[in-house]
Image 1 (cartoon, rainbow, N blue to C red):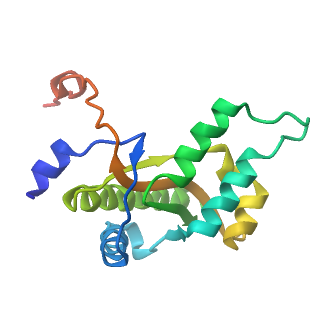
Image 2 (image 1 turned 90 degrees about the vertical axis):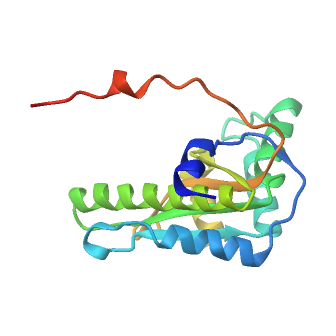
Length: 183
């Protein structure tokens, strides 16, 4: 697949069909992320691949009653199960924390580039993906589950890879309405 073709065709998936990704495909996707541009060569991305036991632990954490004792509804549990357990792979995206706000912003931009590379590589191999934030990424238990020290690294999102149940076709505004040309 040509680069521009992948850019124009790639879509974010929200629902998944059963499928298994090979270790070789997963490694190629992670390597694509690692090839992202990176200001000052800080390599700030951290990729935490969640295996079946870890994904089940994430689901159990999400399904547990909150501090007030409120448990998710049966419908909400099914949605969480589909998000956490159905995709072929789940990667928690972390960012090493830099000493300055400017460097953290630059490193976040690099992480964003890394996930875009991963999304394009996955699409090229016939996989869809989704990068999303979730309440789980802010919980101490999630950090503990992945062995992440929040003083050293911040979880910036979950990255799912799978075979899409449907491929959304969002309506994009014309690029000309978003471009201003200056003399």
